[in-house]
Length: 208
Image (cartoon, rainbow, N blue to C red; front, side):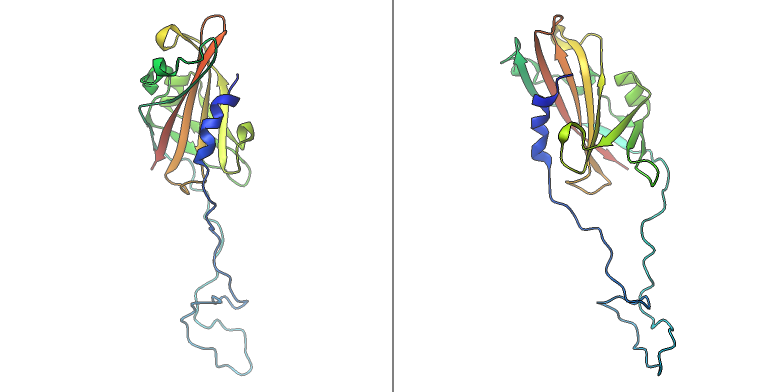
């Protein structure tokens, strides 16, 4: 798999981090700012709550797998090299379904306290890429924090007389805090002798 050149196309997708922290609280549970509750007039203070907002209990519990919709955009970004250098236009109109990237309802499992990866499965993955599921690890291919992805081997015929060699799938949790997710699917194509190759990457979304 030789994805390093094609992955340069993805670096422009990085955005700024969003602060998802909760506001600080006092020891008695009231917010440090914006607390509209009545003043505690007890003398001495016996520790009773003053009517402010209750303490935020932290992260929401894991809701389990969801069944969102995966959608691919039609036109790929194309980068070609070696004997196929300059052939980008030949592959610029190839639809995602022609390289095994299919939309539809998927099964998405987000990271938990005991698993640091995303799991993606369902008919679009099985029928299109020939694997039962994809396990997306954090910061693949030296991408920035917030990207999760995986590369897998592929085989079989591709468009324009090409051969399928490998595929990638990435989820970006930076640009638009999920859900929905921004994602990218890609396929590496080459000639029979691997003397030239093209990398087709398609933007996609995963929406509840």
